[in-house]
Length: 163
Image (cartoon, rainbow, N blue to C red; front, top):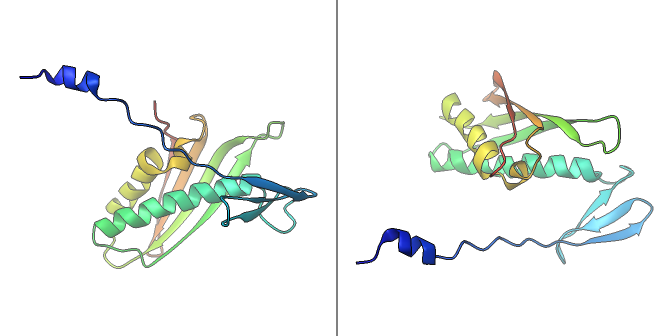
């Protein structure tokens, strides 16, 4: 009979997930970024496309939105419409990193209970959203859930990061 501790010692750790992308400079302050054949424009001058920090905020809100939509669908209370407003507060000095992020989530769907929607938001930001998990732990995140047109309380937390 084998000892479970011996079996665990023989099991190799999981391999990291590798994600690759590419950025091509187009001149001025514009880039096309993304995997081959699926690029989008990033404009640091914010003239014709979102800039790098706006792109980061968009990645955060869309990553969490997918989690929230999926979690509620698994409860058999599908989201009918979803939108979000996101605001990033940055240092005035360089590097002008994010210090605080405010997200207002608008979720609509028949039968979605506030408790379940709030739990979906919490799970997204604390456990599932890869983008949120990549943020520095000192960034304050503030979420406000508007469920079926009714505003709930503001939830403030530091972004959780894995060990």
